[in-house]
Length: 214
Image 1 (cartoon, one colour):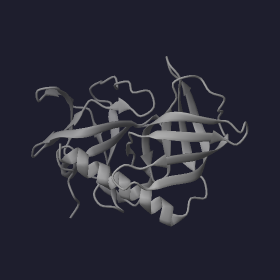
Image 2: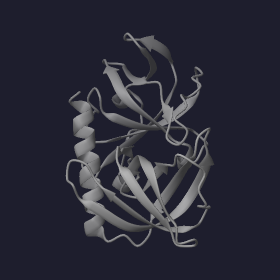
Image 3: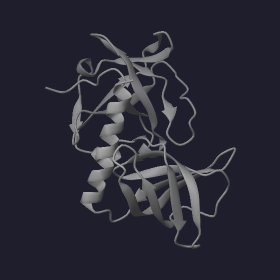
């Protein structure tokens, strides 16, 4: 039987028709027999809240185990206050089509750590603040504009919380977004050994567990 996300579980949200690069993060604020209530989603890259419009169709993903992610679609049914604003969505078991997918590397969680990013094109190393991470890649935010461009190859060095695992891996830049201060740089892992990816996935589930226990 499909697992239902507990209150506090992270959600990955995107508007139907948009790519995974334009995804939002949220959490389960509450559940009842008919509805799932989600914190107002925040854009993964910019940190801006989603503009909530009734009848917009969203794709919602949540992790049920270390290997399985469930996905379903729901229209935004409205806003509820419990007591903070929450987006009211169809309950996963009421949606009519709850799909189990094995895509653990795409489930992102927040990461609070300093990251050394070396651009192979320039040879320069920049210290940035991590934004989030998954088994497929990570995003960082710099305090100033740096010479890192789309499709650049990089080396990333970061110590993961909870496990103290030092992640040293090659990446390719898939998006660079200018911010009011600095840049947000999204990177995907390149030729990452599965044993190393497993360490990243281990961190993502420890992080989810910590979020649920708050």
